[in-house]
Image 1 (cartoon, rainbow, N blue to C red):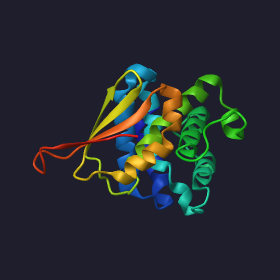
Image 2: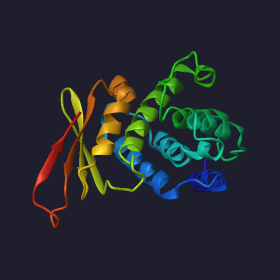
Image 3: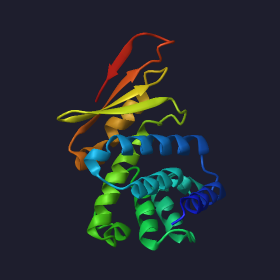
Image 4: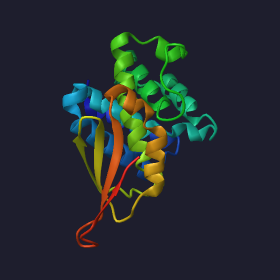
Length: 208
């Protein structure tokens, strides 16, 4: 499939539902970066990265319907859109990844997730685990994370973040929403915030 046509289709939907472009594209960027940083551990394809980024762009469009349960509204909105550049299975993956950016974890008892084959279920678990982390790291919707790299240890993934603030809200959100990430990677997500050198030579270590 033509990735430009796919992105155009995703952006058309996002714009139609008045998406928060600053937040959505920050989450898209963070999610894509985490995906690439952890490529060795999840071994998904570059095409799967695109599905993650598309889900990130659309993850909050459900607010157009209602704040409550907006993640579920998002899923149904994606599923009912005429996403012509995509095959149906990819649409279902995008919809599920967006749906699981918050609240309940994926389970076969959930109707749409239950229709996926096992390979796509695992793909959704991994991508949604990353999306939950990326969304948490922009909790304030202010693009406070300027740079991000990952350090993988025996029992954790440390997100090294450059920011000019300490990010207490983002860290609290990560602690609350890192459950799926821990489940799929079997490692605890942690954060180390480093302020830009021009602002201060000191680093602030923060963790869950």
